[in-house]
Length: 271
Image (cartoon, rainbow, N blue to C red; front, side, top):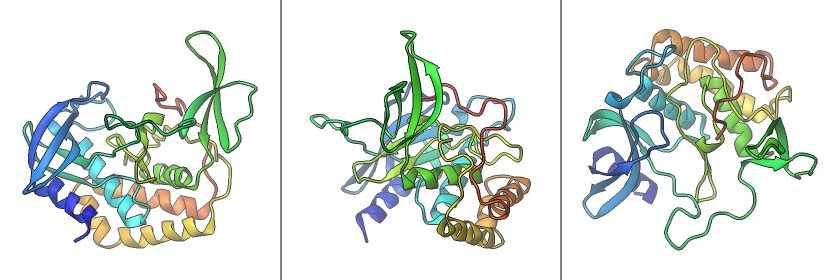
């Protein structure tokens, strides 16, 4: 059994201990330890009972949307979403997700040098390897530009967000792990039948989608007709599963990244 499989078993079956609440989250969100035998991992626990009501998403459905996003990510083979389950916890059933360790998280370690994958830069100063998203003013009144890295891992994430109709891709929901992988988290407001896409990853708007990505998306459509579709139907509505397939088909029919042509295309705050 690989270390990653060991971690998954601990997340699924371990004894949960709450270490503290993550106050920056809009819903009740806790940092936990899960312990099974001699193995302990950190994870994020979001109980269904702590979900805040939303006007456009039915109550008590966010955990199922988080798990649906994980299943889609895993089926695509992109593994954007950390390992996720729904299980019982100290505050009742909820979503449990493997914690992504980032440089600087552990005591005595330093953050990754250089700008973040999504960051603010002074206007008029070229940033090689970064794509512009929007101009704004910071709290000091200085003009800045929001940019993200021109990175294939982020580009896959942008396609993933189109597929799952992610309404909340903030910069802070993009994590660069110590394993050099890029992860996306917080997918509770996804999978809606109506267009809800809000993201900071607009740098590829209007650009063609590469053939390899399109081939993967085509495979997802086939998977939705089988076991994946049945799995998702136990977590979200059938109409939402159908809408997911339609978004995939739309990308194949018009293989370019969509642009921000709707009201409020950027989540707020952006980080």
